[in-house]
Image (tube, rainbow, N blue to C red; front, top):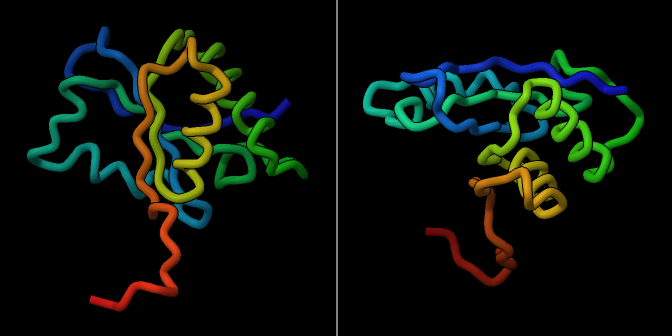
Length: 129
């Protein structure tokens, strides 16, 4: 069984809903700590935020499978272990794919998805700005 590791950024109250955030393939989730804690950011006034590394990332356990279904199952197992019944899932790059895959397979566990990724645009036909 793959164990996921991350860091909890506590919101202004312990009873706030939970957000779980995933980073892109080559960036540690800790890179987003400054974003969530920055002056003017209001996220921690409405959410407790887990910066979570999915399998094969940083301190989380490594495994041969990179299958999104396996990664999604890891996330749900993490939520069960942390007693998180529902959460907003979000991510950047591949982390956005993890958030989306987990949410679409587990609609009863997710309150929403935040997806920071490029859109499905064929850039061959767009000129640079």
